Length: 337
Image 1 (cartoon, rainbow, N blue to C red):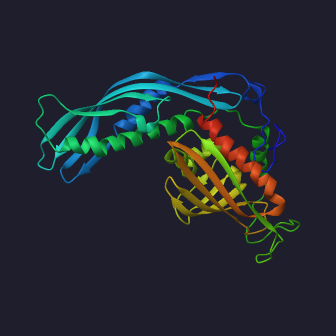
Image 2 (image 1 turned 60 degrees about the vertical axis):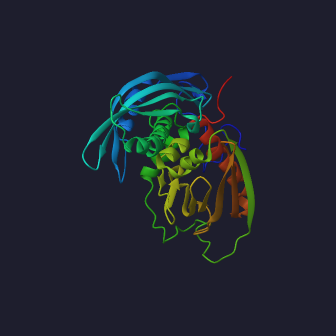
Image 3 (image 1 turned 30 degrees about the horizontal axis):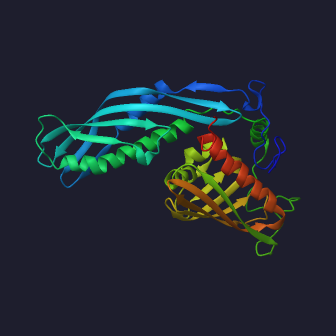
């Protein structure tokens, strides 16, 4: 693992750009309560489900009670939130008859897993019995649970912008990128030894596996890898992520590129992956396994075809900028006691 400030420059250097809270060492806190209240209402009012009996949707959010905040300590973002929510749902039968009911969430908290979230659905007082209640209790609850996951994702990405300071190297890269002329990828630049390596020339490669543990379910960790906004969150830079078979990705200002070969939700991601400094058109094959361990995740990364002289840098990069980047950005394992 690279030492602080000694990281491989092809990844991202950790030296900070300004002297305020250098290296993100000091404790900083941001109140996310008002933002969260608005975001929760926005997301919940978009909930709608339907089947052959009719449709149900959240039409009013009557109670958003609680608080949320984010703390940054030594570059680690720690999330605290606790909410009690009440809302009204309206069902419309195929016949056109409308029904009303209530939904209550009493334990949306950073201390509880999403699977433990208690979502209580009831039919309004004096309302006649309807099959739409069952629709809301099954599909409606599922949709609301997904919506709460979207709130958590947004809290970890949209609201955290600027809490971890950019690096001097980031700024110089941006300036250099603007000044540098574009090079046609089909015409390798002269003098670039790596680019002169023609397709079909064998280079010595190696394979290795990495493992790490995340205190969150596989569905949540999987989402971090395939959601563009979340990838931008943990890499702290613009990214392109087209999460489908054959879809391309580009991370870390173009230093890492590749293509998705296989996507099995919550279980596995297969991809072609490369550094831009590797020989032209040479890719490693990487498979990420998400292993469920009682609601937590063991992440296993199998790498094949990595150039031998790039083994250490590739290992360090995955540990530092994927594993640790995800943990620090989203608070997995980053709690202070």
